Image 1 (spheres, helix red, strand yellow):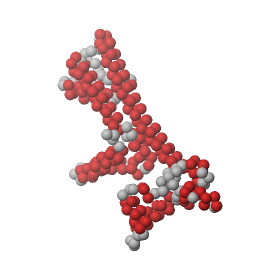
Image 2 (cartoon, helix red, strand yellow):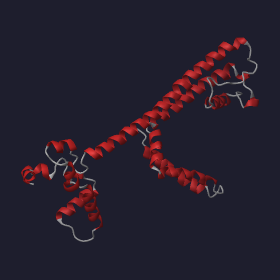
Image 3 (tube, rainbow, N blue to C red):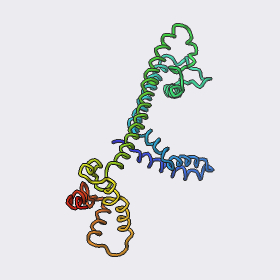
Image 4 (cartoon, rainbow, N blue to C red):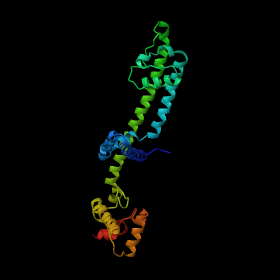
Length: 256
């Protein structure tokens, strides 16, 4: 099941509620999380977040894969190279868990390749080939392949979001919002696009009508009552889908 943006938005709202409650007992320090609400007030920031989370399901799969890579290297270090770590530089490998935490920490640091550990007591030439193999394989798996996959997924999310936005803008300018007929189809039938969207199927006339149906407290006609019931059920069958007066009455159109 694909993870959608609205699912993350619901998680965000839950975190806002939790931080609001816990902020009472932390002297308001957790209220700083509410600054993220600024992103919901600006459309540009919202699009950036939606683009970054477009492939959230695939991105979440990448993190366990990265952890598996780090775990394999932690086993190698713990089994045969644990003496090379320098605790004075926060390099710990007394247990497998400590090795995993150290590898994870150094994996997140920018480097030219590899982990750049101290290699204490392993500085002679015999360990050079081993270090080249470990650093190069890690650099290829984690940095080149892993980070590029994450970057490409995020960029592809922005590309798809841009394509969807362009398609929506194109539909708004070439498709009638009410009946769904295209501008080219109506023009080929001799119907003016401007007259169709401004007089026959003016979207603001429909919005005004729907507002009237919801706010009116008097009696409705049979047609109005039927439209209101379908509108409440989100049933668009009352709309003239694929039809318009100019197409249904070509003789009247020629007379005009």
